[in-house]
Length: 236
Image 1 (tube, rainbow, N blue to C red):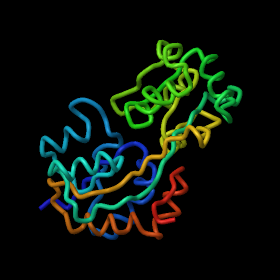
Image 2 (image 1 turned 60 degrees about the vertical axis):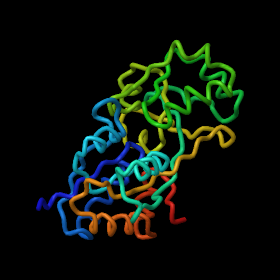
Image 3 (image 1 turned 135 degrees about the vertical axis):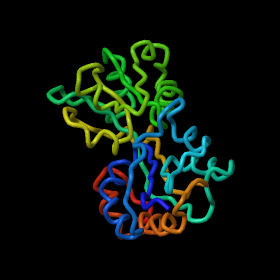
């Protein structure tokens, strides 16, 4: 049997996963392989990979997606646990003035002034385009200047390259990107908090090791590394 421990993680937990992978390798005694660092889209998305039966020992996604995997028989209920809570943030290119998004009115004005806005294929992008813009009453005005960034690409990279003026993504996905600045969470009254959890896929070759890994990732021992990546540990 392969000694690879294959992990599929969505972008929000990627930085934490990479920090914690050496500890997971010690706990499982297996060689960690990061299969994907994004929920993805189309044929390469995590749901489609698991549906095709692609081998994975651990999957980490938005909990609503993980719960769906369990309902559909793509993941096991045993071992499933929440790991962290994320929030949506906004960023601009390094050197640009800090955007004023501290209040609802300020955020609305900032978005209306922006020449271009990037958003992701993940939960943050769905929230921004289907809920946030509508709550601000500016959906029709801003959507024509928005750029959808899919295929596992990071919104922060497009900001850094000057392809969009500002962009939204999970704070934990923006933090590792060089060339962006003023990474700021949305105001509390407009914030979208998302729970990310882990489960053992039905295709796992090392299910027992995966349960041990999840137990560690959801424990206080992992909390500091999770917090350092811009997430709130589920163990607080």
